[in-house]
Length: 333
Image (cartoon, rainbow, N blue to C red):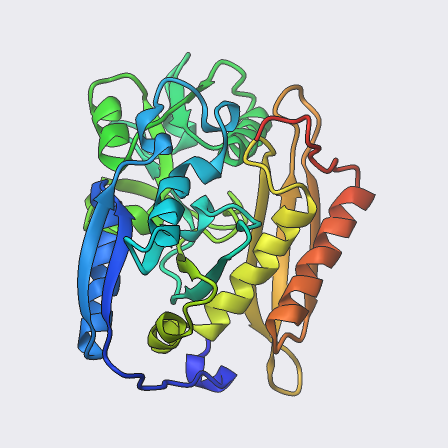
């Protein structure tokens, strides 16, 4: 990815502020909040953390798509922002709903970590090593349909893909207890917590297309807080922001629902004559049945959030043209 400076990032130096970060209390969420805290303190601000437990952290016995979707991980943090108990909230961007409530905004997207998915297993180096009747765990409908397609191509109709909920440490514990033969997680979280040794294989996007925003951190604020927005400006990474904006536009146009198995991943690619364009790939599937995935891709020069949004919108149109269905209000959140 090219340096942010190539995209015209500015680095303003606003007056020092005292800032409070609302964060979930999982180990990964706290790492993310501490990371942002250290960066802001390096800019001269004073920062404290407000740890919170969200509904998404509390409901672990049902699939996320059946109990309210991604918003369950951010609602309590948004309440803290609205009530003035916190100034900003740090999120894994793939957990942030595609449309924020009125009065809130995504004020900063930071440079992306590894966006890919990781295969974690104590015994199996990959899909081909799974024993008969093996169980693979994932919390994601996107991963479910992509794994199902890969297993079907291998003739492995005996492998079961079962739900896996909980924070990263809980999921690893369930694997170690023998509840699953393997699990699939975001590589970024494992790397941030220095758990790379648990990774047996990293799926290239050609093997398993990532989720919109995967690997990126987004910072949410209340819209009127211009001083907080200015304080966050030096942390923003424009190439990542435009990339994930295109991905999130695909998801938003398709209904923005975690009950919809949808992948969207963009990358900057060079073109003849110099320069870069943003290329985006997307895939949509049916949770039930054996229908093949619908895939679409497009690329275009992008030098604004609006152009990134337009590119993602075009990819969503191509998905629908290929047979994908937009999620409706009657679908689970």
